[in-house]
Image 1: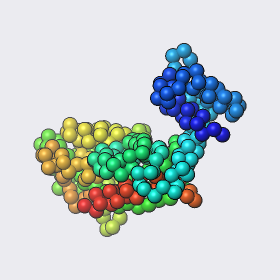
Image 2: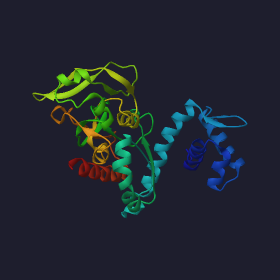
Image 3: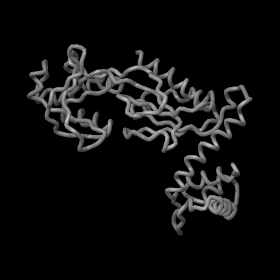
Image 4: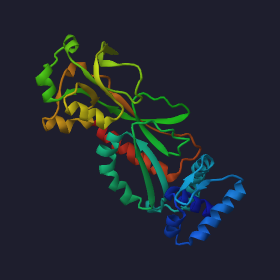
Length: 299
């Protein structure tokens, strides 16, 4: 199968436009359209749904794009196989990680990796939703918390310490809790990646075991930033990684409470698909991000 045709199709799918793809490729729109039509004829399926106003990827087109991206990436890797200089690494790299780790840890350090590997194009997804690494075409993902995936290679990076915090306004209205018994007069802002899930409560460690005290929640959110914002607004207590809260504590916007009743730390893990040969650009990124994460988490 023609790799140039795959690259053209991938660009059309990404841009959702034959015209924009043609401009980026320096080709005519007619040429780009012809290549995609020939590809569809060869495959015996429609990859793109065309209207006068838009171009959309079909389900078959999405599946084909995921596999085509892997093939193009492997081809780029093969081309650079015997080039030993780091700058020779090239191709697209798709990564997913939690928003806080992305904004507070990875992105501020990312210029280091980009300077070392200027020909690698990075696609960074930062979402609280757990993406499907294989079916959504990610090269690697970072997870905070217990692992659910199976059949993936897991590389432990460290742990995120969790603390309990509230806003000064909330504590002025409800008082500062000193014990588990005091929590009967307080309320939580609850975080759940899936709204409508089972109710949770105050998590704490006792006798080396994780325990949970049922508590009322005035609000449930499914987004990390909404979780912090609700706490800042005085809606309740939250339990979250210290990494994202230290600045607000130092600024006096949040106050740590019940330090002796913290939740268990969250394990942080790098996951990637089990392949006999991991692409060099992927391995280079994983080694770099592991070093960055381990350095930060150790502090």
